[in-house]
Amino acid sequence: MGLLNEGITEVIAVTENNAAPIGIIVRPGMPPRLVLFKGSRTTENILRYGWVTANFVSDCYLYPQYAFSDAAATDLMRVFAGGIMMQRLAAADAWIAFQTTVLHETEETYYIDLLPVVSEYVCKELRPVNRGFNSVIDCTVHATRYVYNPEERLHGLIEYHLEIIAKCGGPRERKAGRYLREICGL
Image 1 (cartoon, helix red, strand yellow):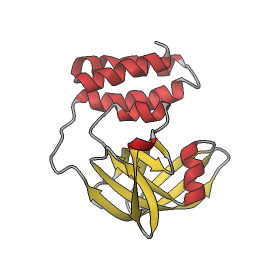
Image 2 (cartoon, rainbow, N blue to C red):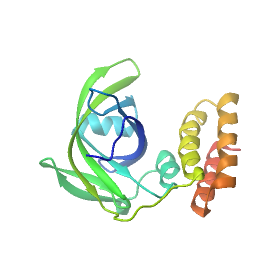
Image 3 (tube, helix red, strand yellow):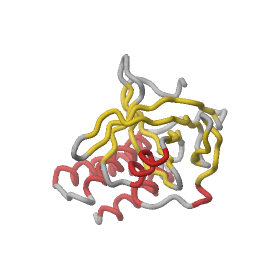
């Protein structure tokens, strides 16, 4: 499962009829892990069904799209993995299917261990990313927090990344930047 390296890898997590950006945490000597906030559809589905697929995409717009809107049925496709039926993102360049286990629970979060069961490289060619792509991901993370708690610090971080998106991104990155600006009311 060479798709994950040490650190936090941002992916589009797909659960039953749901997609959302999330970071998979990989540390030495530990299985891949998620930290999930209680109350999200992703969390509820992982607890209910016991699986998640991590989808790697070269279209940066999908990160804010799935952070702030629901996945359409046509965005997802069924796959049989690890002995059960799961879903993955139809637009994935690559994906990994995981079975999930709750490791620990706090008042606000669940710590979830991930057991990889199958992976697939769908796109065979390399698709390089620009600095704008990376800033779309960072901006999306800040925006998900900003819409619930519009702190000045988050506003500054969002503006910083929107500037990078405008300078260094291509058309798809700039479209994602406009969408994030709209979502945040900036």
